[in-house]
Image (cartoon, rainbow, N blue to C red):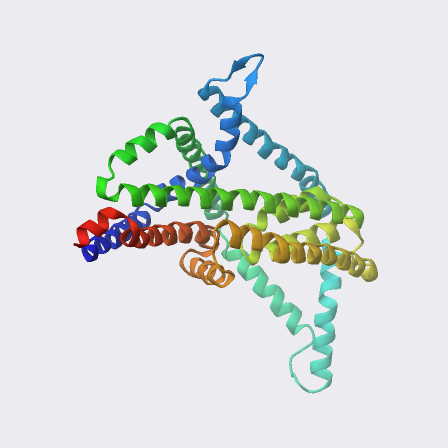
Length: 365
């Protein structure tokens, strides 16, 4: 009996993974909708339970207000990037590309001179620069602008369809969660009821703690980065801090992306490229700030989020993240820990159920 049940559970998970692979878009929409509804649920509960002028908001209005607040936050974040993008456009439009080309080719000309003068090459002067120019022009000639535009239009369409789908699914997850939960519970056989409900409650608690921890991590990194970059005099410190906080959701790669973005923005908007000393000092300031952020994140934030919220060993987290990266790249790295948490809790509760619950002990006899 036990062996048959384990086989059924394994087959069910295998079927779920196969369906997720077969209908990848729908599965991603559902996964994002679950995460979004989990983030909005505390806000929705607060709005629906709070009293305004002695009246409570209807659940429908509380859900709509939660979405409105989320949209307002995203719009506010987007507004932070507008001045940065505008200044970068002005910088690019004011660049003297002929002078930049001449300065960039000086090291190559020095290399050519060294090779020719030492008898290491029999080519005529300018062979490296000309060869590089021909390769770049050849590469640009193969680029088809029409295909790029079609790809951009296709991605934009899929992106907006994804936003609509996730918003629609999240709305019903928030508005009809109680009815949906009762409907799902009604399908559970009585002999598996205790195990399933216990596993579901533990998974919900752990995932909620994990998502809450991620929000706390993002807020902490944003605050430290914004304060540190402002102290050392970096322009667009709030924009850099926001990008760093969001990028940090990607395990291991996120901090590198955040620091790289900060260096690029800081140097392109803060100093003259011709002044090597100023560039180095600014580079050192930004690296110092992001070094402090990483120390705080690795020593304080990550142990709280990973070890405490999902109750997993750091070595487990390391292996699971890289397994997710091997299977699905960056999305796999982001989704690895929640997915592993669901599997681990499900199997552990199933195992404990066979050891502890009376219904299984009776069946063993």
